[in-house]
Image (tube, helix red, strand yellow):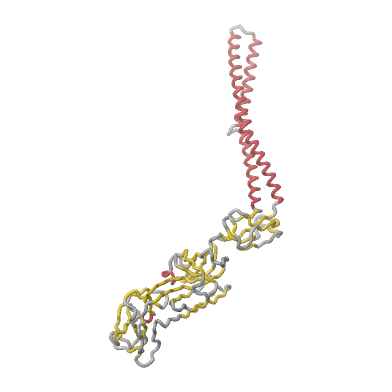
Length: 423
């Protein structure tokens, strides 16, 4: 929202009276400023008689500049919670304005049908996990032990067979006994092959274990998917949040895509203000800012600080954005609330402030009244975006400066209103 902004120069003796009128729908602000100067700073306004000139008595004073604008109260993060499943709203665990801890449920949707599916898939997952664990820790270890036993039997049978074969060749063993030794050796080898094949199938790269692991993964994926779906029925705060608005009530039936609630990051309220780029050189982070709802309560709101100052100027609007951090005790914390902001752009104690029109033809010089004459005097001053100049060198309290016009010349005699004295 782009808003027009006005600048105020304020004296301690009497504050400026500022009036703001705006329409939220249009986003347009009309700003007015009335400047009042206290009687302790004597002024001669208008000529009284021919030859008399306007003059100003210089005094040390408190000087304050305010950039007054309207901004919007916002949170650092805001989100709308959307229903991902259909069902009846069972409960709403917080009221608007409540602070909710991260992970805490905000809205519960009836999940009775989903709960049954979740239980079934959890059972399948647990069962697949138990079977896989049994395969790894029991069946595989048992198969390895069986293989070790069959290896010993195979080696013994082969040893006996080779010895029988030698005796048979020497004629010391009958053919029938020889064939029996051979048959025993072949049977032991077949048993060993079977045991070895089982160990390989149950090993990490074996077909049986791979199949069991694949079944476990499938069951796990199915369960986790159901678990994730279950979470969709319990709408929880993703971070510490404040509940801004609820769109549903208990027993309402919602469909996927329905808005449930708006939340914002707890404790992150700040005011966003758009300012004209001409104010950019005069602002900095850390400056005081007074925030209020009532535009008539100038300087009486909550005090915040300019927290973030954008370094990018909007090409289309010629504005830049600032964010003002507000104190936690600010009583009106509501997202998108329009508030008044007074940024204290300058504060000076015991300083000399003069109107810009007292400069001689725009030069850094003024006419000082001395013994009935106007004496041109160089000054140094600080430029401000208002019509006031903060003089840092060249003027002291008690000087009387003459407003330049065509009748005033350097060293020429001038007549000012009688009775003017330095304040």
